[in-house]
Image (tube, rainbow, N blue to C red; front, side, top):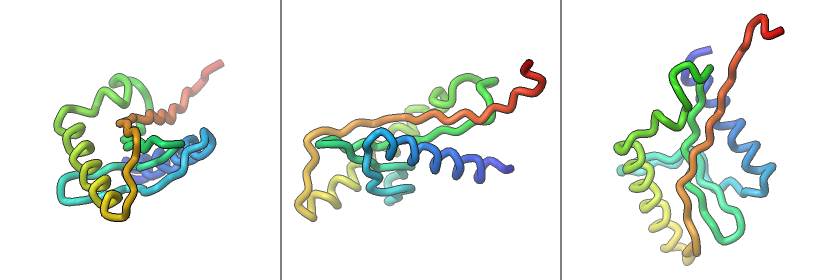
Length: 112
């Protein structure tokens, strides 16, 4: 399995977890000229802009540690684009959050 396939599986897993926790998935892989967001989800009055990081192991640290300031800026910029689109349709959320979901798929050989 290559990294693209692993990432796709991670995003699908994240979406399932979010749904199970009462979130409604509004958009997946939202892109605009200013950036990209993996998942945009709503729960109650809050919209969450979620970056999903999937790794095969934690050998190189936690997945969230790979999200630098440049990536954070692109996510925030994409969120602004999305919120402007929503505002044009008359929707203004009361709360927003920027979240990270870590998905780790580890195969531990000879674990016991």
